[in-house]
Length: 112
Image (cartoon, rainbow, N blue to C red):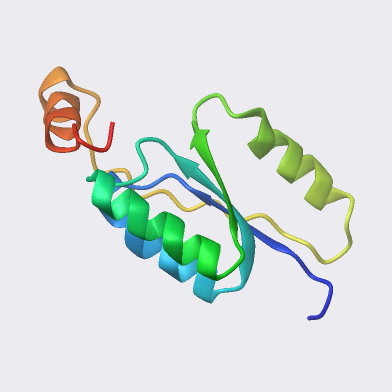
């Protein structure tokens, strides 16, 4: 619909973020909150930045799903708009253990 703005919050596995960003852009999002580190490599971050820039999509990096006040504000705002909705999708496959998270940070070190 004309005049409707879409926002995406990307908080998935780091390796999936480049694909998720492309999907958000294809879906018509004009703003994307991207959880750090954003991508597995610096080169992928550069490619993502270029893709977003070419599509005139604003990227805000640093979103943290555990403490982000914007999630709460988005839900409160949507509750005031008839017919609007907020959908949260989680695909975090890491266990809350030192071994699992250590592997995650080790594998994604360049993007950190």
